[in-house]
Length: 135
Image (cartoon, rainbow, N blue to C red; front, side, top):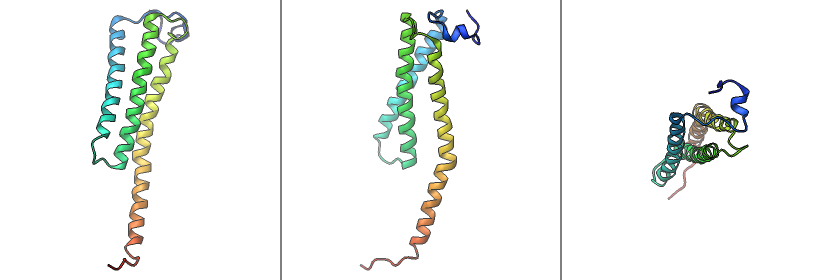
């Protein structure tokens, strides 16, 4: 097995097949991503979610479905030994996309949600001093 850190491992046009354990692990991983994404979309059908929760679930569901599909497609290219498309470098964007989504989640929950809550609190504070409609 070539070194994990060598360029020939990532850019080989005809890479060495995965070890059977890794191959099964990739199939399971991409399948789990796809199933979790579909489950997230089905979860959104249930009413009673806040806007923040809907936004997070929709974003992660969409990302996980696509990562599952693209990962399975990349695995099938590698399994069928398709010349250019079986290069291992194509797995790197999936990992980056996955990590970027977690960065977005942390940023969203720590920065954007408190800002929105502050704006709503300020609006409610101003609104309580406005005259009310007469019945």
